[in-house]
Length: 124
Image (tube, rainbow, N blue to C red; front, side, top):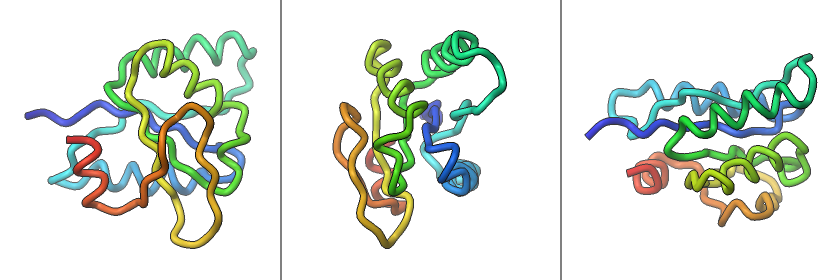
């Protein structure tokens, strides 16, 4: 069975390190997913960004929302989740850090601890 194509959504202003960590996990030999696209912050006009994001999300089988302390308020993440919902792309929220208090992103499902077993089960 091939690896699932994932789009990674994250709070660009606060949690870019989470994207780097999940990209690293995707490269492991026994990873059940590969990251094809991820959130971008560009100088492009809002309409161009939305068009690019919608297309990237549409190419994914699953969206991984990497959750930090402010992700539930991040404008770009909220828009990406709405786009995934519109396109029937499965969404999984992963808590990005071991310590802290985290709020689920609205309309993106429940939060899961970030561990290898959870990733394998959720992405199988």
